Image 1 (cartoon, helix red, strand yellow):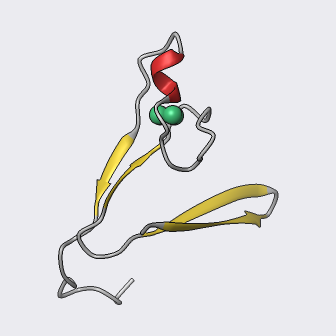
Image 2: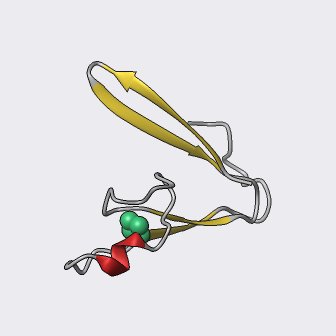
Length: 68
Ligand code: FES
């Protein structure tokens, strides 16, 4: 199950989401989710066209993993 951490980097909050292989998550882009950084559907109640960004983790380790 996806986990996340948030840290303050020079006065700006940075959230990092850790995914397992093959996992799919919807990340909130409207900043109204009560489960931020994950989308909880709240965006549907807003007068906005913003929806989540859906992220698919690879199903298995990639050849270049660990080189970043
Ligand atoms: S709740 Fe924010 S994008 Fe879905």
